[in-house]
Length: 145
Image (tube, rainbow, N blue to C red; front, side, top):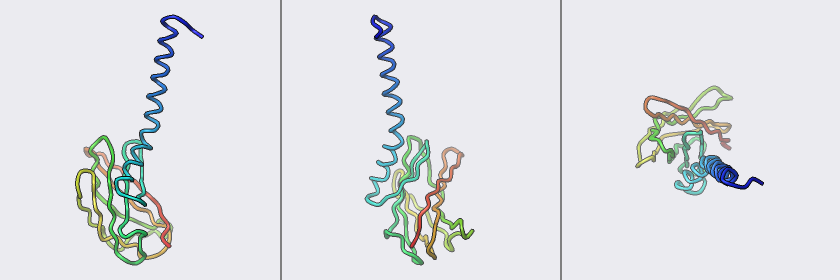
C-alpha cells in the first residue's frame, strides 16, 4: 500500500472517479424510473443516453379496434419537444388508419389522442422528439391481444 502524499492523492482521485462513474451509470436508470413513476403504475419508458420518454395509455390496457389516448412525459436535462406520436405494424407493413392529435399538457407533459390499433399483433409506437433542429425517433414495441 502506498503511503505519503501521492498515495493518499491516488486513493482520493480513484474514489472520486469511481463515485462519478457509478453516478453516471445509474443516472440514466434513475431518470427513466422517475420519469415513468410520475405518470403512474403501468407506465412504460423508452430511453436513450440523452432522454427518456414515459408513456401510459388511457384506458389501460390498450383496447383493440377502439380509440385511446396516451399521456407522455419527456425527461431530460435539455428541453426536448415531442413533435409526433404514431404507430405501425412492421410485420404487416402498415400503420394506423388514424392520425394522433398531440397536445401539450404542462412542462414536459403531452397527451396524444385519437390512436387506434385496429387489429391484434405486434405494434410499434413511434415517438418523434426535437431539440434545436435535431430530431430523434424513439420506438417501443408491444403485443396487442
